[in-house]
Every structure is written in structure tokens, then in C-alpha cells.
Amino acid sequence: MLCLLAPALMFAQYNIVIKGGHVIDPKNNIDGPMDIAVKDGKIALVARNIDATGAIQVVDATGMYVTPGLIDNHVHVFAGTNMNQTFMNGPRSQMPDGFTFRVGVTTVVDAGSSGWRTFEDFKRQVIDFSQTRVLAYLNIVGEGMRGDPFEQNVKDMQVAPTVQCAQKYPEHIIGIKLAHFVGHDWIPIERGTEAGRILKKPFMIDLGSATPALPLDSVFLHYFNPGDIMAHCYGGGGAGRQAIVDESGQLRPCIFEAREKGIIFELGHGGASFTFANARAAAKAGFFADIISTDLHNTSMNTAMKDQLTCMDKMMALGMDLKSVINASTWKTAQVIKRTDLGNLSVGTEADIAILDLKTGKFGVFDPRGERLETDTRLECQMTIRAGNIVYDLNGIANPLVVPRR
Image 1 (tube, one colour):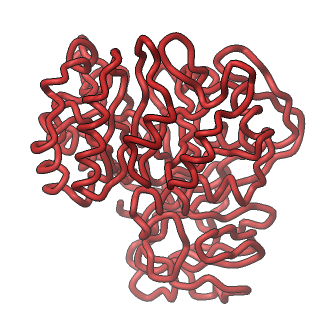
Image 2: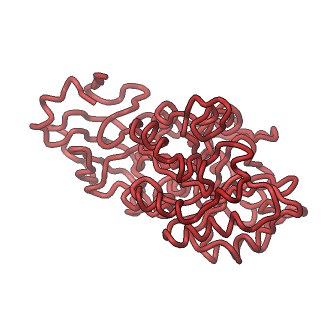
Image 3: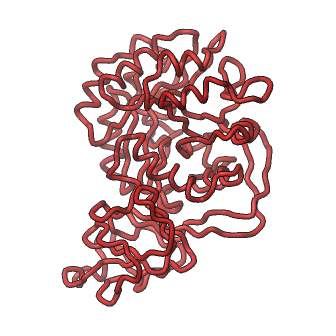
């Protein structure tokens, strides 16, 4: 990105100084008023009352929260024009940049849209093209999420080429994914967990359907490795799958055993994979998702889910405090995906920053079943900084404004 102020950059003490904000940085245990200085794309200083005299830009964040750039751990962004496909190079995925920066997200993780056979197309078309940092869970299915019958093809669930692809692109592939498999068959889970174990990377599962339903205690306690991830943890269950809440509305005992084992529970809202009934029952038992994420795709983003901030609003409505919600959208996620260079504001790290406003008023959030909750707070993104560049400024709070040249 070239800016009108570019000739002055080499002489500036800082490129950007953010003044007056309330910084929440869970990794560094910061939760209070701090200024942040950015230089050459990196966090240069986090301190009280930074002198902004020599800064190219000053951002007044008074009354706002300044956090690490948010990480959305579950999206589908392998967009393409193959209309007979779904999330793999098809119309149900979305290019990321139009839906990330406006809600403070600087990193997304595509959840298995590509497999070893299609990843390089995904990298060329989306990862290399996007300003958003795009990481990926590699599908254990070689084709990826192409739709049926491809996602039901056990013969295409191959450990060796999946591992080889992940080893070839360690900067981009952070885990393994299985989704949508239909049938009472443990082979897909066995192969996904095996690939994750070899790579020492997390395996994420979106349980499909089976008759009888695959029991969660077996999934978590027999097959999963510590660090593996259950997507859509507040999903409603339904025909052919178990929810974390049983038929009496109680959290299944194996959920706490799984957490003790090190299993990760991810929100992954999606178009139909979140219910207030299950989330409320879990919250009542003191259980909240480890990771807040969207499952963004073209049929989820304009319905109950909407975006990362809306998912965070819902968790606050269920009793999570703001600091925990920020942690579950930044540092905790970075730890789970083993990218501890992300999700924090440590000096020397790449300057990915979100500036959020916590609005007060009368708002509403709802779930895919139509249950609505009234809330008195709502998060709104005022600014997003990606790799030291202001990529979104809702109300023009940077002084002076920089007009990008494309």
C-alpha cells in the first residue's frame, strides 16, 4: 500500500501512535489505559503517555478498547466460480478482506475448505492474494469440502499426502479438519487424528451424522489427542449427532473430562450450529467455549451469526466478561493453533491491532432457531491495523488521514 505521507516515513520516530485507549492484551496481562506505538509494521512500544510528537499519525482511542487483531478460527474463504461445488473453490465461500477488517479481524483460519489435492489452488487464489492473514486447516479429504459425494469418500481420506502437504506449507497449514461425514464409521476420525498426531497440529472435527450417533465420550476420550478441537460446540445436535447438552438439558459429564484432557471447544456459530438453549445450559454449568469463531460463509453471514463481533456479543450476553471474550478471540486462539506470534501486542510482534467501541443501548441478538436475547452492549470496530497499516477506519479517527493508493 502506498500512502500520500510515504516520503516522511523514514524520518518518523513512529508511524502510528494510538493514544488514550484501554488496552486489553491477555498474553501480557495488560488491562488498563495504555498507549501503543507502531514503527515499520511492528509494535514498537506499549506504555503510558507515549510522546506522539514525531509520529506520522496519531489515533485518538479515548473511551475505546485497544486489543490484538482478532483471530477468526473458523471461516470458509476458498471462493471460486465452480458453481457445482460448495466451499472448495465454489460459491459458498467468500473472499476474506471484505468481511474481516470491518470487525477487527486480522487473521482467519479456513476450516478445511481445501485438501492436499486442492490446497495449492487455494493458496494461489486466496492466501497469496489477500491482505488478511489467511491460515488453514487442511481437510483429510484430498478434494476438500467439495460437497457430496466427495466428502463421503473414505478412500480419499489419506494420511500420507495430507501430512506431506502440511509439511510443505507449515507457515499456512496449522491443523487438520474433518467435516460432514455421514455414517457410523470411525475411520475418518482415526485418519484425521493420526495426521494431526504426526504433524503435532490440532485436528478439528465437525461431526456429521450417524445412526446411532457417535458418542461424544468416545470421540473425546478415546480418539482425540490433547489440543484437538470440537467445532460448533453449542450446536443443537439433532438427528444423528450428540450435543454437549443431553436430553434433560444437562451438560454431559464427558465434556469436563474432555477439557481436563486438553480438548478445545470452539463456538463456530455458522448458519445453524449455535443454540442459546445449549449455550445457556453450558454457561449455567460454568462452561464456556475456549475459542470464539464464526464459521463465516455466504449463508451464515447475513443471518443470526453475522460476524466475529456479534459472536462475541452473544458470549457476553451469556455471562462471559469482556476480557475473557477478547482472550477467546485472540491469545487463546493463537495458542491453540500454535501461532504464538499472533494474538498479542508484545513489542517486536507484527502490528495487528483492533480498536473497539463498546456501545451501550438496547440491542438484540438471536440464534438460528429464532430465540432472541436483549442486550445492553454491542461491540463496534472503529479501526483495524494490519501489519502496521491502517486498513479500516470507521469514523476517520486517524490524524492525519492517509489516503491509500491502489
